[in-house]
Image (cartoon, rainbow, N blue to C red; front, side, top):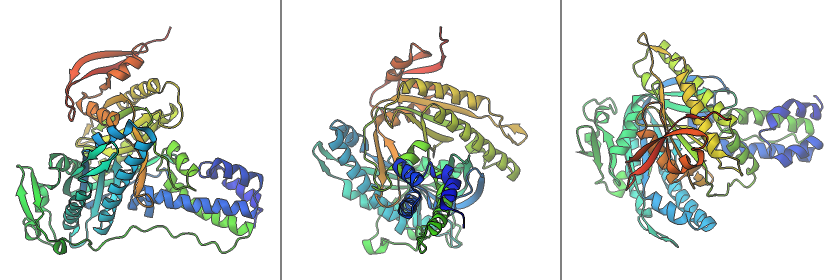
Amino acid sequence: MSDPVLSLATLELKLRSLLPADLYAAVWAAPESNNLMKVFEHLRTLQRILQDYTPRQVSEDPPCPGKISYRWQEGTLLFTDLAGFTPLLEANAAVGEQGAAVLLSVLNRYFSEMIEIISKSGGDLLEFTGDAMLVQFLADPNRGDLAQAVRAGLRMQRAMSNFANIETAQGTFSLGMRVGIHAGRFLTADIGTPMRMVHVLLGRSVRRAKRAEGAGEVGRVCLTMETGDYPIGGATAHPLCDDFRLESLDENYMLVKDDFTADQLGEYDITLTRRRHATALLIDRSKEGLMTEINEVVKRVEPLASYFPVSILNLLVENAAQRRIPPDFPTPAVVFINLKGLPEAVDTASPEETEGIVASFSQVFAAINAAVQSRGGILQKVTYHSVGSDFLIYFGVFGNHFDDVTKAADTALAIRAIVANLQPPIVANQPLEVTCRMGFTLGSVFAAEIGEPRGRREFNILGDPVNTAARLMSYAAPNQILLTKEVYECIADRYYCEPLGEVVLKGKASSVPAFALTGAKKSD
């Protein structure tokens, strides 16, 4: 057995990003059993945290970092969106730490209840998108996934009665929820580099589920009309009608009527419970035994760690002992990017073309992440839009940064160039047209670890700047970067910006001034 100091040196490059600074220094200076034991216990805790931060498909079988993998799956997708959260957030943001505590309490109570229902109903929570969620129900041999998803949606809507009247020091608030469901075929892919991976869903089914949520009504479960033809238990003709009463909303969507008793709806479905990797059992506490176990835990942690932005991973590592990240109200520059062309193409592509599409998506994601990271920003995630895929990027959430708005502007221009210069894959003998559009804002957000405090959760930012960036992005033309007046006033002396006048954005009571970022001015 090699000397533990040499074994520690072998692992040092990997441990740099996985150990808190004080523990890294202590074990390097004195690689004795007590310090090695602390390293082992920290890594075991970090493994649990990273598993809780990732969807079941990733946490149970993460690919080798940097290895592109993808597969088609059948099942049902459920989207949720929370209504009424913005007034609650704005009222409590005005009172600092006290307000942050209230927001975190309400959000985590909400998410904990919803996650419990999802788990009991057999779903896998793939993604938090602000206060929204995407849940996957994989098809089983009897195609019971659709009925599971509908029952989950009804249970979640019933649970929202617990949030109808939320008493706070800032007043009484009410939260509601929309639920959209679509069943079909979708592509799941793990893409990126050894430093940064991401798990994405591509295809028409993802977009249809998202649109079903947007078309639905608060308090109801909305289904796409095609979902009524999705087979359950071998049936083919509107099988849902046998188990649920459906009301036509319009030519594209249906609403589920909840006329079940509590016993009829129940609380559980036969579920695939969320499993953890086996927790390491430490038997040999000698230096050699400890180093062996540390090496084994690193093998399990490293693939999971690649799914996190460097800054967020560092935050989790440094706070692993407390298993809690304090909430805050930073003022970041936020850039929302919609990438169109690649995500939509998989439905009609051949297997060879699909491979090229996924490879291109991995390439553009890696390049965008590099552009963001090199300028000190964070690419939070790739999320799902009614058209294309969205990238949430922000600057200025962690620590005091200099000139975050300028860095965000440079990044937005760099990303536009990356997309413009992308060698597009060939589908049906034609190169795909790949475009992007962006929304760019500045303002106070709520930054916190949201979800189930000791279960499925993630670090995220929420607030009007995030919502406005998304609205501007949706309003933008292909390859256009739209920004708010606040951003314009910060960068006008260094960048060319075209005034667009007042624009009307979805969800805004009044029009807002908007500007288009066209390029950087040459320095003298």
